[in-house]
Length: 88
Image (cartoon, rainbow, N blue to C red; front, side):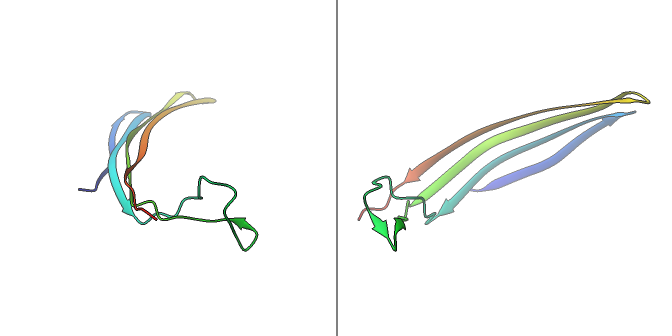
């Protein structure tokens, strides 16, 4: 299952908090071959990886502290892995 919940936003006066949560799946993503001795037309070959899963969340806060000073803070967490592999 793939989902993305994006831009849930809380606003209070001059402050904003934005949050996103995601769980994405992609098939047949072509990463570089881990064996760097395999060359294709002079550069490293790409291989099929099967399925890649990316999970994570992002948080961002913005505030206007006064007329001359704004503040932004952000955090992102990403857990990316190959969830199934193809064989050669």
